[in-house]
Length: 339
Image 1 (cartoon, rainbow, N blue to C red):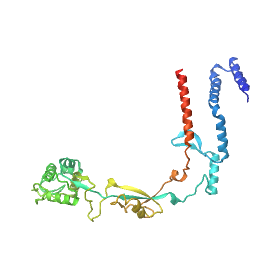
Image 2: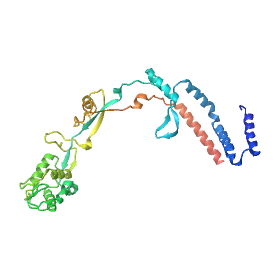
Image 3: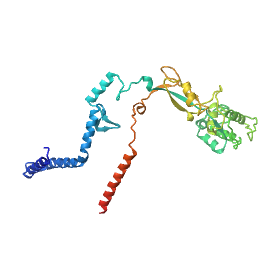
Image 4: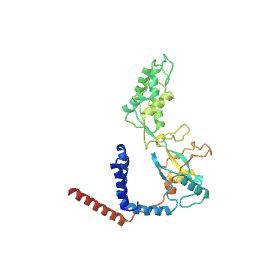
């Protein structure tokens, strides 16, 4: 059925059988509809048929160019599947163990990296403004004061105290903090710690408006709650240090760097991080479980880096010609619509 007349004769023979009622009426769509769809597809694809066939022959001549076969049903991002022929061909490439257009050989170390934790120091300022003191009410240690059952001179949530219930304890803490000048912003935690100690002690301090007569002694949990409520991060403040004088890390400024596996982490840090963040340091407590070295070993296959093949853009002349062709087609369609 190569000629046009052969196709016409075949279609009319089917139509004749339909007219002679050789097919049951309920089967008409099963015969007529497929032929109609096929004919319409043939008409639509006819202008590009020769070009597609040439391109198919060209790709076929290159050998293994695209191993992907389309899935009948899309599965997430995996829209391709490998058939038996593909698997055999891929197995042959792996067995040959030679680099080529469709094969590259790497070591495990090429995909490995060491993830280091980069810390920066905690810097805080402190102030006894009404807004910050109000935040103290949300601290757990402060809320627990109201839950104490101490009577008389028992040991309360913040040390030895003559107060009889938690409610009075809370009021005493708020009242004592209110005696510290709310205008002053202290940029040293050590200095503000000393101010708190003096505020909750009968002795006087230049920053305190009036001494505390009760001599209330703050316990560690409540003192930490007060420091947390009255503090804010400040890049211009002094570095907060632990009891041994080491800088305390700021969790909000913590960052990570993936260092190439075969490169020294300290050399990488000094070259890539230190010039941009002078006060940063490597957290040496974060180590790999297997080799015990600083940083955790991980693996990543960057397909773009290793397998991307650069495709030069089309010449501007071709793009411009296509645009003009499209413009002409659009103008033609518009003229047909407008009559």
